[in-house]
Structure formats: C-alpha cells, structure tokens
Image (cartoon, rainbow, N blue to C red; front, side, top):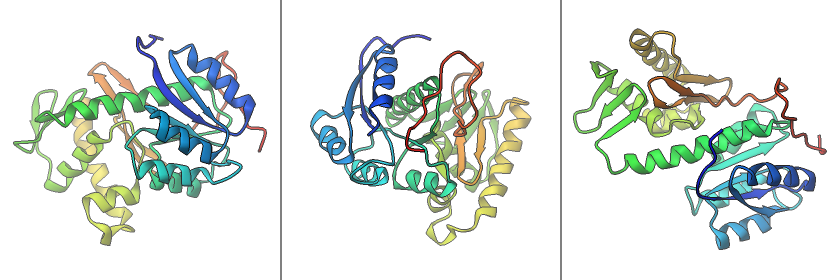
Amino acid sequence: MQQRSIKTKLLLIEDEEKIRKILKIYLKNENFDIIEAEDGQMGLRMFLSLKPEIVVVDLGLPDIDGKEVVKNIREVSEVPIIVCSVRDDDREIIAALNYGADDYVTKPFNPEVLLARINGNLRRVVVNNQNTTKEFLINGPIKIDLLKHEVLIKDRAIFFSPKQYNLLKHLLVNKGKVLTHREILAEIWGRAYLNEHQYLRVQIGNIREKLKECLGKIEMIHTEPGIGYRMDIIDDENEIKSTKIVTKKSSTNSTKEITSEAQ
C-alpha cells in the first residue's frame, strides 16, 4: 500500500482506550497524525481548536450520543466523518448518515477496511474540490459535460433523460459516499417525494442498464440494503475502488479485527 507523503490530521473520538491505542498505532504507520478524544464534548472542542481533515467517531460515547457529535460538526464543516459503532441496526446507520456522517463501519472491523474508507473519503474531497472549478464531472469512463448537459461514457455520447441526468450527476458529485434513499429523493424529486422509493429504484435501474450496455459487467452503482446507494470511485477505466458498507464478516487475511468491549 502506498503511503501518503504528507501527514493527514485525523480526529478519533472513541471512549474505549484499547481501540484508540490499536488505531493510533495502525494509522500512524500510514502517516496520519492522530488526535484522540475519549468523549463527545472533548471531541467537539478538539475539532474546533485543531481543525482535523477527517473525523472517526463512535456512537456509544459516555457523555453524548455520537450522532450529536456528527450533527454539531456538520453544522460548521464539510470535513469527512466516519462512524465506527457496534450498533448495526439499519435505523441507526440511516440516522447517522442523515445527521451528516459520510460513512459507517460496524464493529468488529478490520483496520484495513477502516483505512480504505478513510482514504476513499479523503480522495472524494480532493476530487470534489477539483470539480468545483471545472466544466466536467469525471469518474473513470463516465464524463459529464456540465455546460452541455451531456453524458459521455468511454467518450461516446449516451442519452439520459433529465431525471436520469440529474440523478447520475448527484451520484458522481458524491461518489464514494453512501447516499440514503430520502437524501436522493429530496435532492432529485423534492421533499414531497421522500417516501416514493419506487421512483428511485426505477431510475437507478435505468441508469444501470445504460452503464451495462457500455461497460459490460463493471458495476459502479451499489445498493446498500435498507439504506440507499453508493457509486464507486474510479481513478481510471481499469481500476474500481469499491467500499461496501457491510463489514460484519470476519476478514480472511492476517490482520485482526478490532472488537468493542461494550457489545
């Protein structure tokens, strides 16, 4: 794995000292500068004073719920936030994402999985910052001309209806991030359609079909069951970086999973 050349400041808000120690050792070896906080209030103070580039937060904190930490940070910053929690109920995951979290990893987890999520979210921030000054949105073989409202796949113009175009553009802008059903419906159809999940399923299916016609078996849009959708980040046409939200299965490699004592 290629190590970053510049240290990235990461705020770790986690009440279990054992987990903090393991992650600190592992992430420091990947050239992260780790800021530790053992409760939510301390985490918020450190966030405001030290301005980290990414936040990893537990939900079961001793003073306030981690979702409140996410909400407070999101009110003042767009910094990536990854939740790491033993809570694996879909309602908890959806709530955390709706509060403003960018990603969710369930305990126990493999630190390599967390590192992949961290890198994916940092990469998305860089790409999104670049896209704000460009006339195009690009993700591997997909290119959207924002001025012409045209979609190119492998440099071939493909017709998308206005609704499909806006949905695909929203996925590209947020590539690598889990988007909830309600978040997408509010953005593309409006808040009056928050419960019309079938509208979203149909249009996602239409977009997948058009991508399949051009890309074959390559899957770029993934369903997060009970939650929403995520588009892969593709650095080039030959490489797909997929970050699925399901992390309950044990890893088959030599790296041990990190477990929570508060299960």
